Length: 303
Image (cartoon, rainbow, N blue to C red; front, side, top):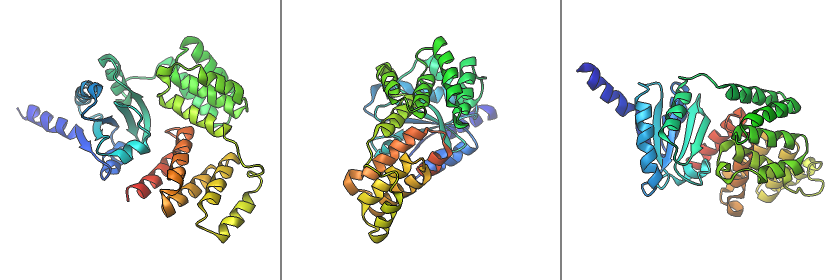
């Protein structure tokens, strides 16, 4: 009897509702010790009512190896906006304080079980997963041509693999081949467009395609001098951030956008926050700089 009662208490502790105030503690900090799945849902969402209990059962069956946090998007719209939740149900997995996996929409229960197993670390990576990890490491090392070759091999076996499609587009962007990157993105199955790998590649391509003010990349000093004379000139600070990003100075670009948000978060219909979210998408959910910047943004938005 002690085991049964203990299990009931344990299950109750593994699944909880959270909100903006407790998100950092319930998800970010907790995931540093135990993987956390976050289920973004709403009471009016039919698929959410089906998916939620399936995830809860899967989490409970792992006996404490993983936890589930549920976020009602109607009551926590700022968190939903921060994670750019455009449709629900949306599910993210967090480990070591950062998002590492996820999906949008209802899935068959067998796929939910596989997802939870993967997050809980109960299954080894497949050959394709290992190849994706290898290609990602190549990209981090700046070996884009080699990474592209690996992604091509993955797509030969799995033509709809979102990570390989997104990785290929990113490699084309790095090679300056925006035309083929755009063609590849436009050919993506609409059902895959909400996948994090695809949305990240899309954001990176849109940023690469953004027109800059003539000479803005070279005129960083001029923009800074102008800003020194008028610290609340948010347009100049925004232009500086875009120029810094185009000049591969990502951290400085993020700093300038966060400064605008701190001074006037509603400026120009929240242009700074929206541009920052584009940067986050382009950087990807595992980028250490993105993780730190998202934490700073959360501190500003939820203060």
